[in-house]
Image 1 (cartoon, rainbow, N blue to C red):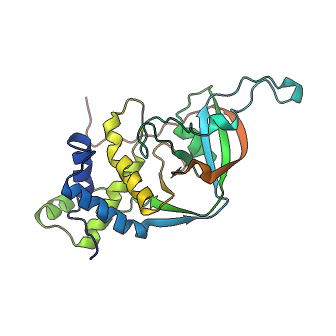
Image 2 (image 1 turned 90 degrees about the vertical axis):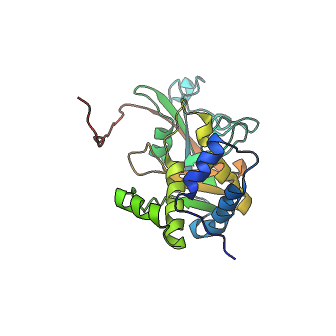
Length: 255
């Protein structure tokens, strides 16, 4: 029997449970939710071909002097600085502290935007390529749009059909991975997506792709669970000359 989501709000209930109540020994409803995620994740599978280019950036540059080579006094970081550390890792959307994964993007601009550089700063980047075909969970859809009041009121009275519930749950998962990340975030806010990442990994996936929240080009981020699934092709160094800020008015106004 196929495991179905209990509610169109199942992800939000799961996120609240593991963020604010318990996370190491899950209750029955949370276990049931993860089984439904595992069973329905097959419809989100994206095959990544061998040789797929992936970009990864780090703020800063090497100060190694290479003037004799005619390329100036600064060069990009070496490979070991552009790759994640193998024995430690900071908290992220797809990994708990201490568990390294390979965060990257499908294009250079998105990778650079993800490190939040400032005007005048230097950013080193590496162009990597996958060394084999990979199975990725595609969390880039976000096709359901924002819930309007009519939908909320209707679903509050009567749960939608299972297929509709599944669409809304995966929409919420997509949005959770795409939420902006900052150093000021409470680490507990990462827990739900970290658990989902482990669920995907345990289901046999090699990584996750999701929309970037900071890219101006609708960029896509890719997280790989195995650090050895990529090889470095080349590196580069850029100086940030301009940052673009886009905004829209919120629903309310302050006077």
